[in-house]
Length: 289
Image 1 (cartoon, helix red, strand yellow):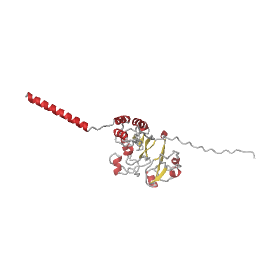
Image 2 (tube, helix red, strand yellow):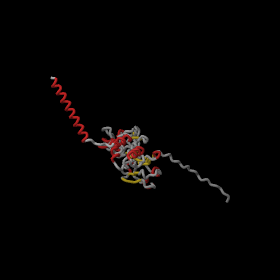
Image 3 (tube, helix red, strand yellow):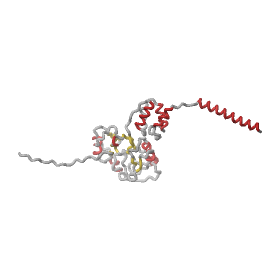
């Protein structure tokens, strides 16, 4: 009885030793070397895993940064220029400094400007609504108001305004990750340069219908009148599909287009109020003839 137990112990011990040797040989043979710089770069990244850089996570982006010779086209929108400079110094590579951007909603179709003409009874989701429904108003291009963009934001930089039915973007919290852009099925959220003091001018409308139809659906719709296009001194405005678009990199923020827009569809943010010129009547001075 004792011999059989001893034999069993010796057999199990032998099998364990053999298995350990086999695992050791296999691990050495199939060992995959990983550059330790990948971990160092990952530690510099913000660990947001937002995919704003084009990679599924910070780890995969770190691998791309380490394994790519020219990283000038790679950028972490959450970390920004400071993080990219630190990574470039660590890797001995060059990066291009980029202007910060923020998300902008290209729609002003609030409840008072764009009245509802029907009601959607399906799931409370923009993605599903867009597949089976054109919207609860006569504008099929505007915000659906279900908040998919807000749910996609990982940084609490957006919330739904109960009064307007539109998402509100908190510029100071926006990291430019682009998650809200991807989540919006109507493509009405765009990343635009933040500029100093967050000054922006853009067309807050995506309605491609002809003027009369667009205006009937929404009081602040772009009617494609081209007045802004004609007055722009820098050629920053283009007209396509009955709709004006302002190029943020050509626009000099002169505000001439804002004043001339007949439907107030052009939005200006954070500008000081314009000074109103006083109507001063000329004073006639009497002179001796």
